[in-house]
Length: 233
Figure (cartoon, rainbow, N blue to C red):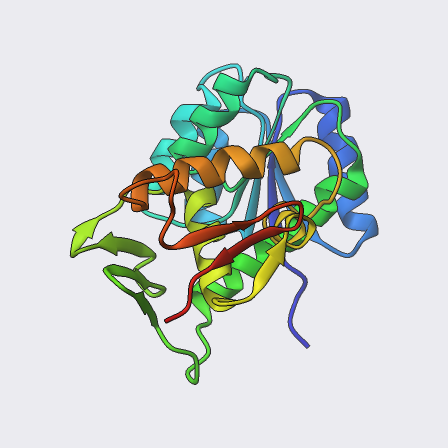
């Protein structure tokens, strides 16, 4: 039987850190904790955690810079938990490479759900099913699941991690209508809060990047009141 996933909690507020650690332990997760960014980077390289729960407001290093540093060499799932609730902060954290973002205060049940989603996505990346195709093609659009890249007419399309995950999810269900709730649960692990509005924003950004005319999309169609469908040739 494999060990439970190993989670690193990077949080300088000791009561919050203790609360997260106790909750993770109660659900059988192994964990390690760090109170500073420098300590976190050392533990990441020496212990190779499966998921990183990261506060942005650390005493020595900015959490955004830590995300950038990690993304230079690793795709380990990073879940940001921060008191910084401004949309700009969330977008920057996600653009830097964070997989998810929770604003304090948050419920532990929601954080655990996000952890499970992050683990599932990372497992799909690192343990590719040998029977699954490694690429998806439609028209001039191509997704390479091994390289985690999207190209349009052989030109790289820069997608944020969340945008890529949405595209990868839709490509695995190409031709089928995916409801808003289904996409939200798969990407964010929750069907409540502002994620549905966030999905609309992310989808609009994706369309701007892959559609010649976003107002008349060729690849991602909107099923009004239901969800989205990625065309399947």
